[in-house]
Image (tube, rainbow, N blue to C red; front, top):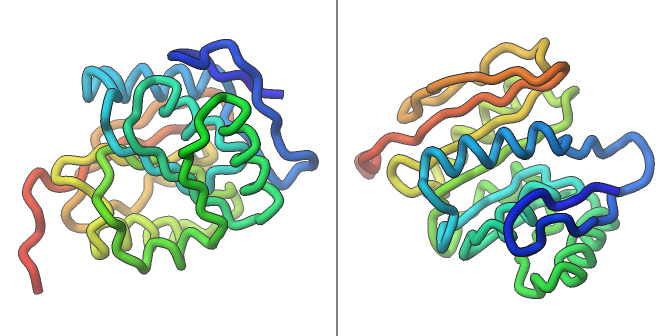
Length: 193
């Protein structure tokens, strides 16, 4: 079991998938992540939050608990996506938008509206090139507002993500075997091609 740390659902527990295929972001790392996010934006209140490779949904549900206006969670495994939906309902977040599809396929579409904050927690074995493709797709298919915050969680042994043109990597923070890489989308939209 994992718990929501802060906000309206703070202290409430959510169910995590069984087995080793999902690696929930630890409480310590989530607390540090949201401290950094809230330092950047002041408050999540009303912002749009995208959780890619959502796993248990702990990060996206934490964003909702802390006031995010729209939260979209993308998880390829259908059973795990159903578990995220069940967790959201149990927390009183019936409007959670859970997408049961591959992240790469999802990012090839253009969203209804761009996001202010994007969190990517791909499986550690996922190739660095695939993570770079995801980051490029965020920019290419208008998933980000100008200046959006993008955070990538990887193994501490992984190199810095290959931020595409239009991004600036701003910092990294290590927590044992985990590292969070923070980047920002360009503050002005890229010109249309």
